[in-house]
Image (cartoon, rainbow, N blue to C red):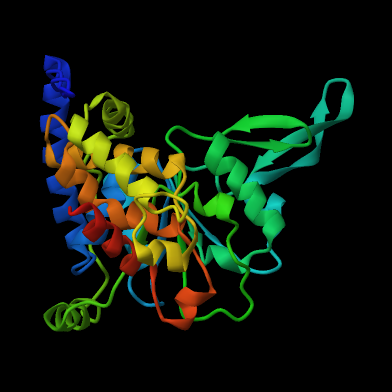
Length: 340
């Protein structure tokens, strides 16, 4: 019989970091709540993404405070923040930067020098607003930055700040003048987070608070060095053997050719999640454990991140559209198949 290896103890230094992480995340939630009403689940998903050093895709209709939410998180963590509005005429150089010819005065007269003018993505946290409105060439430039953490301009590679993360938004209802996101780029997002409408009471509070004067100014809860330390902690957090087995089983059951795939997957899914999906699920589970101040990630963490970690990695077929079947329906069928 297979014996699961014991979860190794957390070193004393990491235990202290875990306590600091849980405390800092609690303070950050309270800080963001001063300017954003509700959306606690979205804030937690963004924290998971930040600590896992990943990128997030926020999907929601206009007016749900997605921009305010991301900027508030960045300011509370002491991160530099930049917003890029993606449009059909946006060029790669508009986001990565470009080389310019500069005239310099010196003792020997005027000389010319090529200087790199950094683009707006040279910040810690980039909000790529309506990312699906820009053509594939510009999306490809952003893909390099997301994957490699650097950009190449004129044959020269320029490193991006540490940390560097992209939070992109997508409007799910207005598709005119948009470009589909390549599957390779979708796979680079750690989580796809859906931002929903507020509750009745939350909407009342939004109406009261946002019409009564300017929002409060947020002060940093932690510094950038703390963010780096917590990000480095996440890979060191162990995962239980049951958590690993579940993450692998969930990803494999999303593939139509798998023997463990439920009938819904075989009928509606063209391509399931690849190994990067398994990696994302485990890494996000580790980050969720850190947010909670737990010493190890377990099955609960894996299940909590199943939908945001795998939904955008499923390629549904035409039958799914005809039968109004969405990715969360397929993932629910996988859970039923695996009885978790």
